[in-house]
Image (cartoon, rainbow over the protein chains, first blue to last red):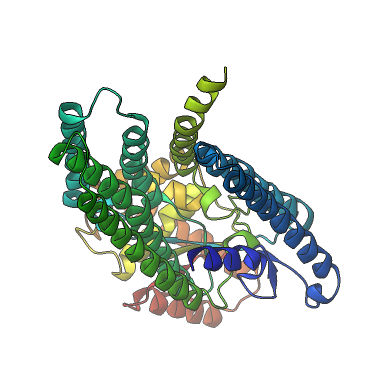
Length: 307
Length: 133
C-alpha cells in the first residue's frame, strides 16, 4: 500500500499544483496539450527506468538468494533515485522556469520557537532509550554481535533531532496575496514533516533498537521467538501509525494548497525561486550529513569486504 | 501579522522593515511587550542577509521602539519613541507635502489624502500592511 501510494505520488509529482504548473513552475494554458505532453513523457520515462533498475536489482537478489546484498540494493537505489529526481527537477527549472515573475513578498512577524514544534520531553525519552539500549547491548551482546545495525539505528534516530530543528527553520517566501492562507499552509506542512519524520525515522528506529537490546538482555544466548514477535509487532505498530499520519497529512496538505501559488513559481525581490526543501541551507547541510552517514554505514562494510 | 515588501520599492530593505514595524506599532497592532521574530528567522524567511535585518532592528532600538534583551529577542518597548525635536519631526511631513504640491494636487485634495492616510493608520485590528512604493 505504501509503495503504491509513493509510486502514485511520484508518478504525478509534476502535477501536484494542478495543470497550471509543472513541478511548481507556472506554465501557459494549454501546455499539457502541447509541449507539456513531451515533458510528462520524459518524466515518466525517467521514473519508469529508475523503478526498472530497482525491480531488476531486487529480482536478481531474490533469484540468486544473495540477501546480504539487500542493504547495497537499498542504499544504491537511494543513491541513484534521489540525485536523478533532483537532476530532473533542476533541468526542468533550467528550461521552463528561467525567469519567474518577481512579486511582492510578505513577512510573518510571528516567532517560531523550537518548543512550539518539538516536544523536548519526548526527545529526551528517545535519547534515554537509545542510551539504555547501548548500555544493555554492551553488557549482554555476545562477542560476535553485529554492532553495525545498532550504530545505523542510533545515527538515524538521534540525527532526526537536529533534523527537526532544521525543519522548524524551514520556510519559503510568503506571497503578498492570500498571505494568511499561505502562512497556515506553510505552518501545517512544517508540522506535518516534523511529525512524520519523528515517527518514521526516529521512533521507529528507537523501538527497533530498544526492542533488540531488550531481547538480548533477556535471553543473551538465544532470544526466545516470542520476544522477536513482540519487537516486530511494536515496530510495525509505530510504522503503521506513521503510514496513517502520512496519508492523512498528504490529504490535508493537498486540500490546504488548492489554488495557492507554489513556492517555486515566483521569486521575491531578494530571493530566487526555490523549492521549499532547497530554500534552507541548514536543512540541506543537515540532510547531507544525516543521509550521507546512513549511506556510509551501509556501504562501508560492503566496501571493506570487497577490498 | 504580516508586513509586505514591494519589489518596486526604492527604499533599502532595512528601511522597509523598519518603517513597516513602526507603522504596525503606530496602528497598535504591535503592542508593548510583544516579541519580534529573531534576526535569523526574518533573514531566513525573506532570504536577505542577517546584517540587513540586524541594521533594521538596531535602528528600531536606537529610536526606542524595541528593546533587545539577550535571550528574549527584540521586544516592543513603547509607542512613544525617544523625544524628538518638533522641527525634526515635521521634516518628513514637509518633504511629503512638497511632493504632493509639486505633483499638482490642490490644498483640499492634499488635506483629504492626509486625512485618509491617517484614518487608515489609526484603523486597528488590521493584520496586513502594504508599503506603497
